[in-house]
Image 1 (cartoon, rainbow, N blue to C red):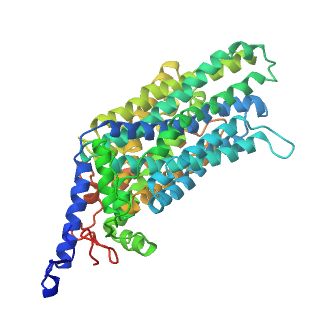
Image 2 (cartoon, rainbow, N blue to C red):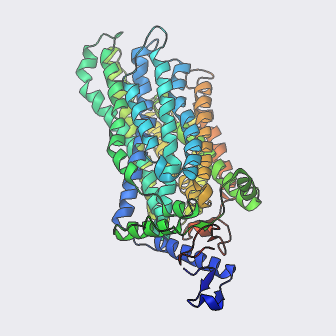
Length: 548
C-alpha cells in the first residue's frame, strides 16, 4: 500500500514523491472491493454449509419452541385448566409471551450485533433459549405463583433469545454468502423452521402414543400422565440448542463487520483468506494495522440515511410486509389446533380419558399434516427458485394467492365445514395457504432485510423489520383470542380468516416499494456511493511505516 508521502533514500536533498490523498483513498477502495469480491464470487464450500447448519439448527430450535405450545397448551388445559381447558387469558398468556419477548430480542440483539459484533453476540441468544426452555419444563405452582404465570415469564425470556436469532443468523449467513447463492443460503437457514414445526408435532405424537396406557388408566379428573407429557414436549426443545452452541461460539466474525465497522482492513483480508481457503493465517500483532475511515453508525447518521425517501421506503416496505404476513402466519400457526377443532376435523366421539387421548392424538396428526403438506414444501420450493425468479416476484405471488385463499376460506367457511368431504377441502385450502406463506412472503421477508441495508445498519434494520413482524404476531394472537368466540365457541373464526385476507392484500402494496435484490452485491444494495467510501485513517501509520 502506498503512503501519502513516499520518501526516497536521498532524504538530504529533500527530494520527495507526493501521492495525493484521492489516489491513496482510491487504492484503499480498490483493496476493499477486491477483498469483498472474493467473498461475492466464492464457490460453495464446506464453510458455507457449516454456516447454514449452525444457523439452521437455531431456527429449528426456535420453531420447535414456538409452535410446541400449540399442542402443549391443550395438555396444560387438561392438567391445570378449569373444566380441563385453559381459560382465554391463560391460553393467550402462554401463546403471546414468546412473540412479545421475540420482538424485544429482535430489536435489542439487532442493534447489539451492529455495535459490538455479530460473533460476540452469536451464541448468547442460544444460551438464553436453552436456559428458559429447560426452566419451563421444571416449572411448578406455589401459593404465590401459579404454574401458568411461571410459564408466561419463562416463555417471555425464551422469546428474547429467539428474537436475537433472527437478525444474527440472517446477517451472518448473508455476509458470508457469495452473491449467486446468497438467497439459497439464507432460505436454507430459514427453512429449518419447517422442520422444527414438524418435529414439535412429531415429538408430541410420539409422547402421546407412549403415554396412551397411562392416560387411559388415569382418573378423568386427575390426568397426571399429561403433566409428564407437556414437560417432555417442551423440555426436549433445549437439546438441539445445546448441540449447536459450541459451533456458534466458534464461528468467525464476518469480514464486512471487521472491515466496515471495526475498520481493520488487514484483519478482514486475512479472515476472508482463512474462510475461503481454510488456511490458518495470522496478522502480525506487532505491526500497526492498516485501518480505514468509513461511514460510522450514529443516531444522526441513521436519521440522515433513512430520512431519504429511497431508503425509508425500503425499511418501511420490509417492516410492514413482515407485519402483514405474521398477522396470518402466527394467527394460524399458534391456533391450528383450535381451527382443526372448530371445523370438527378429527374431533373424538368418545368421552373420558379415551377422549383425552384421541383429542391429543388428532391434534398432533393434524399438525403433522399441515406441516408436511404445506409448511415444509413451501420453504424448499422457495429454495429452488429464490435465486432465479428473485425475491420480489415470489413475495408478490405469495401475497396475491394468500389473499385469494383467505377470501375463499373466510367467505366460504360455512359451506366448507358442512360435510366431511367439504371439511377435507377446507384442510386442503389451509395446507395450500401454509404452502404459499412459505413459498412466498414468510421466506422473502426474512431474506430481503438481511441483504438490502448498509453493513453498519444491516442487523439493526433487520431487527426492526423482524420486530414489526412479531408485533403482527402479537396483534394476531390477541385478536384471535378475543374475537374467536364472538357469537359462540369458535363462531368468529370465519371472520378472522376474512381479516387475514385484508392484511395479505395490503402486503402486495408494501412489496411494491421494494427493489429486487437477486444477483447484486450487498454493497450495491446499500444504495451508497462506493467510490471513495473508505479512506486511510488519520493518526495511523501506513503500510510503509511512515506517519501520515
